[in-house]
Length: 132
Image 1: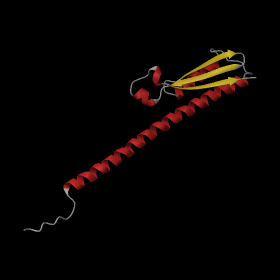
Image 2 (image 1 turned 45 degrees about the vertical axis):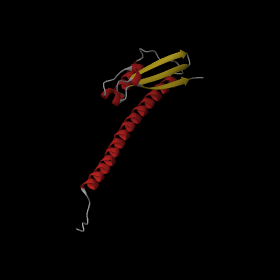
Image 3 (image 1 turned 90 degrees about the horizontal axis):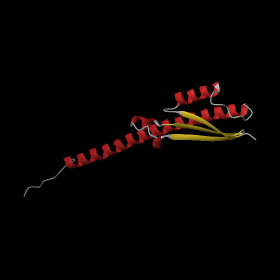
Image 4 (image 1 turned 180 degrees about the vertical axis):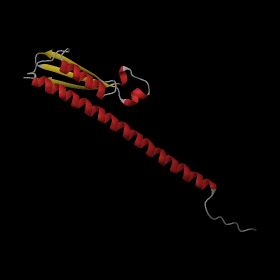
């Protein structure tokens, strides 16, 4: 009888190690992609909050009067919303002389990249301002 002694790793062991390593690397890549997407969404939400705050300050500085849509400041603000956010749209709605609702709607970059610019994939930031 021959005494057969095995030393080193077998091909199966190496393949299993490569498979586990590849799964770990793919997991890290997916984590990085999700982190980048979350960062981009956060940046858009921050821009929307700043733009809404800008219009709220104009409303308060205007004595609590809801500005007309034809107001040049409102038109310039709407242009900034469109330029700052992908598919951005800003609307103002006054319920009375001292109430104003500011709504900013935009499409996240991942929804634009996938080609779906429908209403269901849009993000929205709404601020209600009350002047006593």
